[in-house]
Amino acid sequence: MNRILVIEDEQVIRSALCRLLERNGYQATEAGAIDEARPLLLQQEFDLVIADLRLPGAPGTDVIPLAEGIPVLVMTSYASVRSAVESMKLGAVDYIAKPFDHDEMLLLVERTLARSRLERQKNALKSDLERNYPVTGMVGDCPAMHEAFERIGRVAATDTTVLILGESGTGKELAARAVHENSSRSDAPIITVNCAAIPEGLVESELFGHEKGAFTGAVDARQGLIEMADGGTLFLDEIGELSLSTQARLLRVLQQGDIRRVGADHDRNVDIRLVAATHRDLRQLVDDAQFREDLYFRLRVMEVLLPPVRERGADIDTLADFLLAKTCQRLNRQTLSFDDDARAAIRAYPWPGNVREMENAIERAVILSDDGPLSVDKLALGPAQPFATAAPPTAPRAEAGQSLEDYFRNFVLEHQDTLTETELARRLGISRKALWERRQRFDLPRSKR
Image (cartoon, rainbow, N blue to C red; front, top):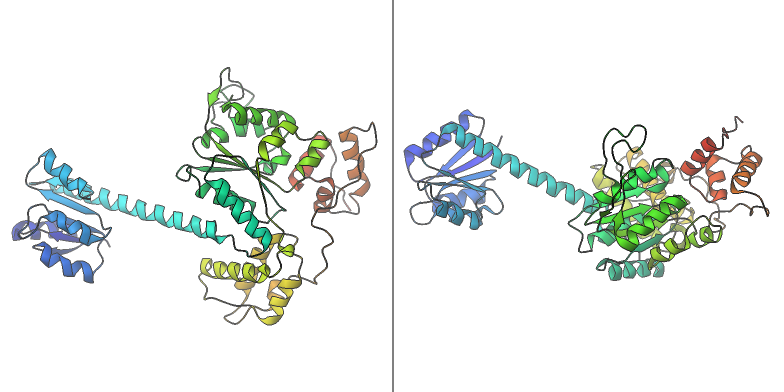
């Protein structure tokens, strides 16, 4: 039930207004002057203050600084623009002229409370976002993380294109959000696109939009994700998965700030800041003619390298404690800790899935644990095995004269009975999504072993 404080020196009007509010489901408290309202505001919580402009001793607008964020609705006997403007300048959310219609007052109260609720929800969502993607939440004290922090801090204030490198799960999206939140575009949107998750036949339509009738199924014109990021930041995750034709169109956006929707006959100007990320070796893709060299040089103006968890040394303890505290808070659990065996296992495990894997393992352990320290069996890490190398294993190079399609087909048919889909994708240097798409395109069903 919403609590409303009514400040009005005329007893008849004050009582009538309180009865009106209470009949309509509000809880009303009354005061005859600012001095009477002051202790009430200190002792109780209110959702709205309705104050007459002319009160004995001090004007009604004097309650605004006392309300400390509570919306204040001003009543005035003078339906003049001047009194309304002055009240609004001092911080009142709205005003109403006396005598007022009951329905008019109720409508204004409902509208003011709804606006206040939306503002609180917006602040809560923003707080959640900052908790999940906090700029200061990129914990780490190893030299590699210090280098990443410094680069993010230096480049964020500029409009320079940023390329974030690192294995899957190292926090590339978190770093991209840190760049955005510390830039002059922080009030504008950041649009995140996972290039590996969009089917190749739809990627240009998704990124650049399309006009009505541009292709079968295009029943309406559609704005692309790049246009949605206008004025803000576009984050292209796994940019190495884009086709060469899409890369060419993206290069035009970076060079000239122009995009053309699929099926359109004119360009549109956009103002975006591009942050890209990949776990792949773009230089190698350039050498293999799978990535445009001119786009590569446009992207790597500033590189930020995020190290894998296994190379962060003592940071592993700090990171695990941070993720545990965040998980307990999100799951509404009291703060837990790791027992000695669990902490030793966390240090020894190679974490091939990096921060993402660690966070998931800790969340599972918190859910399965009681109030005591988290045990190693709840983490379900399995035996620790040495991790041979930071780079994913790669497949042998194609033979001279062999097409990429033939190479892909031969490699998959030769190894699919002995390797999982994840291992196949890693050997080929592509994502599982890209592997699935190429299986469909080349008519290579999965082995039924």
